[in-house]
Length: 349
Image (cartoon, rainbow, N blue to C red):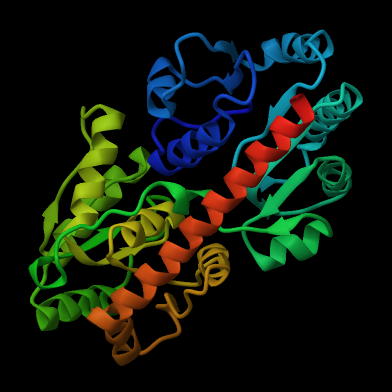
């Protein structure tokens, strides 16, 4: 399995842990390539103690040797998430193509969990397509990526399989949460006014939270601008931070973010997800549209205050609509996992 990712991004850890769950028990030995990830990343993934862990690019030749000399019918599982295919990624794609060919020649199975493609360019895209077409399971998390890839099947983002939580009853939920990227410019005064007014109208308190460590300082700035509470990450263990965040989402009516897996976890907890930022990238829009959730993304630079308040004001009907779509997405992912396990078992019998 390829399980790279930054330990400071709980969403990345989440989708890789879910992918690991799909593969657990399908083979006799787990080999995990984690890149430069620290030890805490292994705990975030709940990686089994007996796994062979490969670190850094220097271990790639060993990975290839392990595949070459593995018993027949190995299983190769690539990581979920967004795949950058801009210039400079050709060598990485060639390595994955080589791995795919090796596994197929040995009678094995190649699984590509739901992914998105970012910044496609040639020849990286052509190499990626070649590997995807040679894989038995190739899944994409939105229609536009499926169209670019020209192969494979649409499936919900794997984050939706992270467990639906009942959370608090709607009437007892009391917060509007905000978690924005630290790399974006600070929201303008109209955005701040719209969020404040929506919270006041709904009788909700404002709190900023941190799901990606690099966003911590931005969360502090937003709390000051909004006059809300700031809940940082600080020295909290990442595993505990994830659970603390999920408890916050359990008590929220609305969660505002431009981080996709902040909104995925919020929706799993029964909160209403909203992307309210200038010029949204459409990544969130497309991934949620794939499960039937629409109108959650609003361009704050092109919208008047009334439109911004409208998308932020929570209703139990909207919450119920989102929760039902999330339930169906989770059920679809359960079916996909079972089909994969059945397929692997048939190949390896």
